[in-house]
Image 1: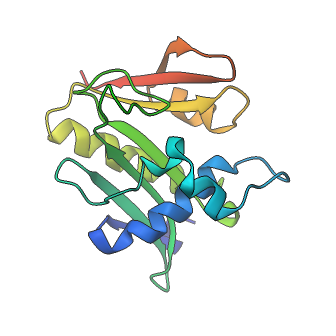
Image 2: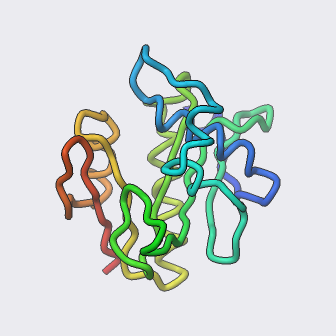
Amino acid sequence: MSDAFSIRPAAQADGSFLGDMVVEAANWRSGGARARHEILTATEHRRYVAGWMRPADAGFVAVDSDDRPIGAAWYRMLSQDDPGFGFVGTAVPELIIGVQPIWRAHGVGRLLLRRLVTHAREQGYPRISLSVERDNFARTLYRSEGFVVTDIGEVRDTMVHRMS
C-alpha cells in the first residue's frame, strides 16, 4: 500500500494539520477520544505545534494519491523550561508522530519515522527522542526502528534513537 501514499517535507502551511496529528496521537486509544480544542489548548500538547514552523523545526507529511494529508512526523527543539513528554536535553529534538486511524498499520508511520530520523541525522543531531505510553502499539514500531527506553515513567516512557 506504500504506493497509495507519498511523503513530502512539511511546510509552514501544514501547522493546522500537525495539530490534527497531535490530536490523533493523544487519542490513539479507540473510544474515550478527547475533543480537538481540549487537546490543543492544553499546555502539554500545544507546545508541539504552537508557532510552527520555527527555524529548528522539521518534519514530513504523508499524503494519499489525491494529495490529502494522512499522517505527519516532525520534531521540535524544546527548552528545559518548557519540556515535552519525551524531553532529554536542549540539543535533542523531540519527535511527534500521528497517522489518521484508517491509515495505521499500512506503513505510513514507519516511512514517516524513517524519513524524519534520516533528516535529523543529516542535520547532525546525535540523538532524537520521543515519548510513548507503555500500552501504545506504536512502541513496537519504535523499538524495531532502533529506539530504546531511557526513562520509565508512570504510564509513558521516553525513548531515544542514537544516530551512530
